[in-house]
Amino acid sequence: MDFELKDKVALVTGGSRGIGRTIALMLADQRMDVAICGRTQESLAETAAEIRARGVEAWPFQADVSRLEDVENLVTGTIDAAKRIDVLVNNAVTSTSAPFDELTDDQFRYHIDVKLMAYIRIARLVLPHMERQGSGRIVNIGGMTARIVAPLRMTNGVVNAGVANFTKQFAGYAAQHGVTVNCVHPGYTATERIMQIFEREAKEANADIDTIIAKRTKDIPLGRLIQPEDIASATLFFCSPMAGMVTGQCIAVDGGSGEAVIY
Image (tube, rainbow, N blue to C red; front, side, top):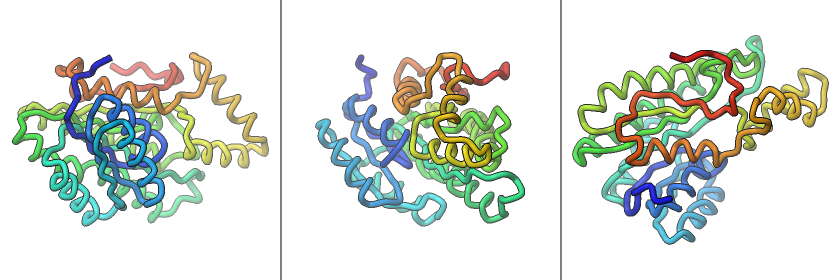
């Protein structure tokens, strides 16, 4: 299916692995040029090569998005290389799987800086470029901990709730410039990060990891863990003309596991 994104430019943070990598590749399949950032040069180079193999341009940037200077260099570098940014996917994430009594102030601050503050800073820097174009798409990748209680993921919950609120607040401001802002909340997605969380849950429950995976899968009405491609597909919709009148929305891609009624 053609989502009318050919020759446009996307910037995907945390784009070298996991969900971000899959999003970057799916956008490249739509003939978009893609800038990605990450902390590991090796994974950045590998993903950039995969993007270029699809016949489009890729610009990998090594960056720690918790640092304002790195974020500024990321956006400036993308504009210098691509001359424009049509799509921003804020996806960078960190995770500490631990109960409340093990979490320190520094761990809470780092989660806030890596995700919430980075999303805010990058959106602030990208918006003027989208304003000049008169259009743009911003998609924030949050997480279901914004809506549920997860005892070993409190830092994620606090930050993802902030991402959801920021999405709504910022969408109202950006709309005057033809820019939409939406959020995707992934459920249990089969990535390296979620496997680390499952390993901690297994340790806490004195169980093996297969038991934890089976339990989590049982909690998903559609009967399987979410795949990164599921998140990428929802993101692609928000980037496309089909979502031209959709802004300020948070959609859960969770296989039906979320039980809250969201009005």
